[in-house]
Image (tube, rainbow, N blue to C red):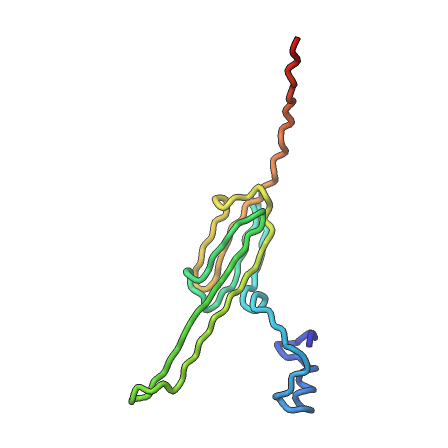
Amino acid sequence: MFMPSVFGTNFVDDVFDDFFGSSFVPAPHVTSPAGASMKADITETDKGYMIEMDLPGYSKKDVQAELKDGYMTITAEKNSQNEEKNTEGKVIRRERYQGVCRRSFYVGDAVTEKDIKAKFKDGVLTLEVPKKEKQPEVETKKFIAIEG
């Protein structure tokens, strides 16, 4: 159900859970992994913009930044597998997780990948994006040679 939630709780779902039991789900519950795990603070500076993105649980090798057609896309991908065995070597618990989150920001066509500075430390990705305006193209006159 697409309803606003307060403090991570959806009051309408709580009512249905109480009435029908916790196994009843009235509609697919949609959550946004990007919104939940890729929160970003954008600060304007004199030279450009600073983006600080929280990526808890991810390491530097899990994060990729790509610039294409004026859009900077941040992708974080996580794959993990945990397995517990008892003393006889039998598996008693096995858990797997795979997830991908993406966020895109329009930075302009004039910005190149060399202009953007990126740093990842303690689960926070910091990107410095300069302010650049597309340079107006200089109009050149193209004359046609006239014979004769």
